[in-house]
Image (cartoon, rainbow, N blue to C red):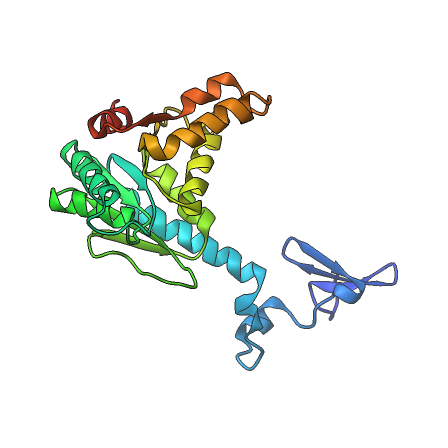
Length: 251
């Protein structure tokens, strides 16, 4: 388009056409003004901060912040478990022992940063002089990061947070938990099964809690042809804290 008209809009075969970077808009989808004009016009509506293009930038910023905070973390293991586990309960003390054991083995502990089993693992690591990391998530029932977190990052988006759990850990220790714990568990299993990540041990701690799930995977999912027999080797179930830590920390 040349002459005195706008450099990014004009007519083509009688049709209105507008070029906005890599995007072409025609007919009724042509937008008034230019990108610079809309950027500099402070009197315009603020709806743009809720639009998808702006969300992309927020997603990008979350990746940048997460990578920046954790890039120099060193060896780490992600620990998952229920936010509803009460302090003093056997599962809480189990998480605390796991956090302590990981710290003594020279590993940072990464959790979701919330209460319950997450707090227990962070607490055990902190009490043993290890690095305690909490990756929080924005939820309607916001709980905030527990007091034992040394490095904390809060996320808006689950998928960004999940990336951090996997990228900066060399394995998962999974304590008894609910839907969020199951979500992280099966996400990790899928990544290992599809070889998106390699050498990524996944250990479920608590045979009484997890044996039913393991049996269902074996007797229903695999028996029904929905997974392979070798997929049973993607995870290990144990009650032994020392064994669990050895499995996720071995080179």
